[in-house]
Length: 147
Image (cartoon, rainbow, N blue to C red; front, side, top):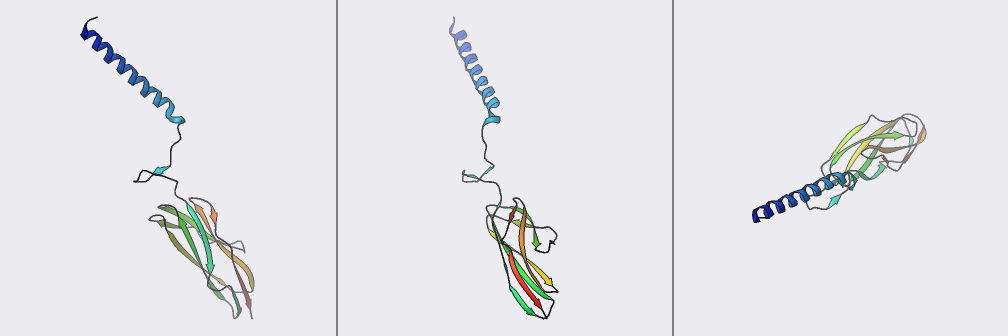
């Protein structure tokens, strides 16, 4: 075998091995786990979600002239940037229209809602996050006695 033929045979062998490795890699790629996203630092992060939701009310009870307006404030915390859809749900079965909120990064933002009640009631309201993950705040109780 001449030196040139040996050199060509070696190059062909390397090419065949490289092509076989590439084919194996492509065949195995569906079976490898992948992360949902990665940060610029190279560490893997989880998908955008709301991590905590809490609610408070300005006044838990009233005893007097009706109607009375209660103001609820919800705090939503996220693990990354993204958009949230949510609504306020009440013990009487009603709910507000769905709203959206954009998170610029991992942070906490607030949403507020007023509930004007015209008759005596013992009820609650809570914040319900619909997307990106389904999560509820605590139910905030209100007591209204109209005179």
